[in-house]
Image 1 (tube, helix red, strand yellow):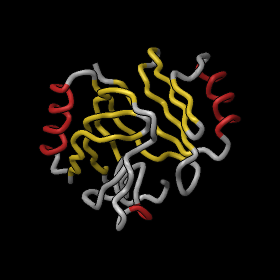
Image 2 (cartoon, rainbow, N blue to C red):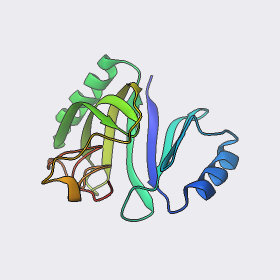
Image 3 (spheres, rainbow, N blue to C red):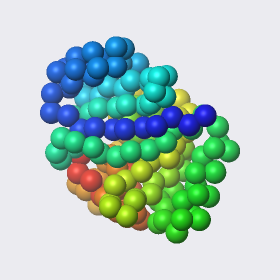
Image 4 (cartoon, rainbow, N blue to C red):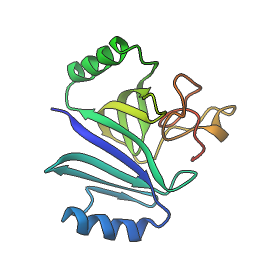
Length: 156
């Protein structure tokens, strides 16, 4: 079953955790020094916030899946829609190990399709030296150089 995913950049993590905990009537499922995530069932939503990013606001949207077949189906849909696809495969991002790919909608909004495979103790894998200054959370455009959670955004 798919779960809608939203990732926001925030300026004050503690204030935002308090606000969203009240809004969702639930505490985060995970809290780190720069990150928090709620895994809600009603509505079925993976809502994440982090202090990593250039400006507050929506970083990216997406779908989290439970099964590899669902991820393959999302990839097939993206290809059928003639959307440029950045396939990261297995990667580390947002304190999780996952299999993922990215697409960008016609307005330039990045969409992440992923299956979480496990938790990790770091936000993301280290960026390659040449891409480190311009990479992390979501792609600004697909395809581009990659690292962490997607290419071409300054945040790590």
